[in-house]
Length: 160
Image (cartoon, rainbow, N blue to C red; front, side, top):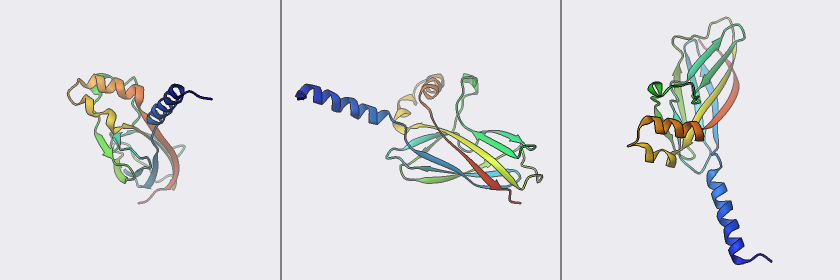
């Protein structure tokens, strides 16, 4: 038989564990042309999330392998003076498309189909509010410790 105090502690622990689980985000490439990729992001969770610079990800093009990698994942090598993310709120259940200009990168016509990997970093929106009046380095450290990354690889036909 479980005592009332033990049962209460178990319920509190389970509730806290559920609160800390990452939300569910779906990313996919909607279209790609020579200098533009459209990325669709859907928030399938019950919480609002904050995306990190969804229109300006890091871009790595490998024309020989017909691959493109787009990533907004925050890495420790990004120094504090270079940390100026655009924070975009994506509401629970919402889907949004982001136009990613590849300039100066480009998807050459040598490949009809491209393998595009997207890594979109995000945090729960309730985590960000307390950082408005704090130095950006505190936000950067928090994101490094708590970011979630939605990843997908799509084969995309290159449009003209």
